[in-house]
Length: 41
Image (cartoon, rainbow, N blue to C red; front, side):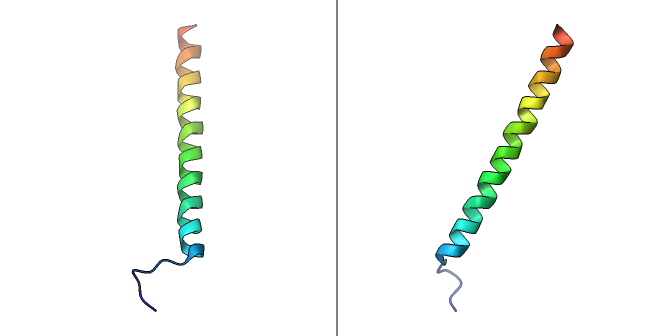
């Protein structure tokens, strides 16, 4: 097994991991913005 060759499963796993992290970052950012906006109102 060579380490520099990525299997499709490994690539999709990394992609999914990235998507999940990205999604949670957006959710967290959205909550922070809502919190700030509520304080200003």
